[in-house]
Picture 1 (cartoon, rainbow, N blue to C red):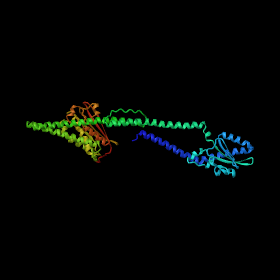
Picture 2: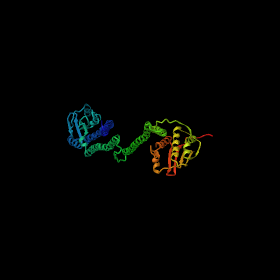
Picture 3: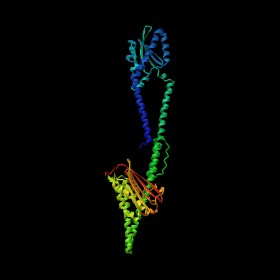
Picture 4: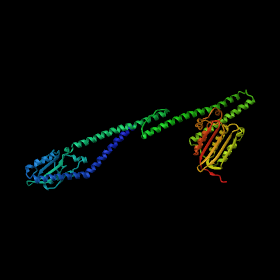
Length: 465
């Protein structure tokens, strides 16, 4: 399997090769379609200027060769032939000297030969550098009454001057540096990805403390920062999961041990009727506690996994709260707690069973942790945007530290609260309120009391009287 580093290098080199290929094709197209003809015409004009000078200034045949030698030294290859077949070369010699039939018309019919324009080569643009007499331009001229043909092309070697060599080395250097830079950049780019891969492997081994240090300000740096946040969250979740399992085990073990212990006492048959009744009551209480814990755990799991079947319907909130208060009237009387409420008649679409669970948990907590002869105040009101429910008690209250943790599962404030309840009630309340798009707030003071404030989005309509 190829690594990302190898793929990046291969892709870069492939792009470079494709770019060069496309550039060559485009250059060849421009050369064949326009540049070739322009160069041919320019060289024809040069050749005509040379022949004009020969005819006007060097009518003496003896001056022909020195003049053409001087032109050859200036960077041109020249081939001269007369109607008698006598020929001469000036400048750098041609590698191929076979003259085509079209070129012979220069001498015989005084036609201009466009060899550069018509010259073809299998390498297209590279044909420009072919050192062949066919790859020339030819023009006729007359000297001492005799007909001549002059064939000319630039000397390619002389065309490559110092500046051309500098440019050539410049392009070579750019290519080498570019490829080297791409390789180094690819290595620099892949390095943090390699670190991320290793960190991911460590997470699969449940090592959430693996250090990942990637200090960058680009997208990879953002990815690393997000990964570190995820790593911390996974560590927190893992600790919460282990704590959850420990708490569940403990909360299940305690009633089970009580049930088992008192069942063994009953089986011993060494108990009187009073003890029998007491043990049976304890077993009944512990079994109900275990059943309640199981139900709450199942409810929490369903809410966590979004598998709870929400049954949305219109619910009369004020009546539902009143029913909850009536259901626990005997406990209120037992502790001589006075309940006062101000409930506006409000109907809204909610899951009736889940919302009823909220009132049940809040009111039972207000009773359970209230002082003997204390007070509970409940209000239900609405504004244009929100529904507000307040449950306030004059109970034992909580510290600020406890307030920040009361919605954690199995959290109970002190030992006085651990003998009863499951520590899941307020977690369920929070989940239900969140599920309905609302918010719950807590204000508490030790020895003064606790106030729960629930804010729900206003989707209800007032009951028509």
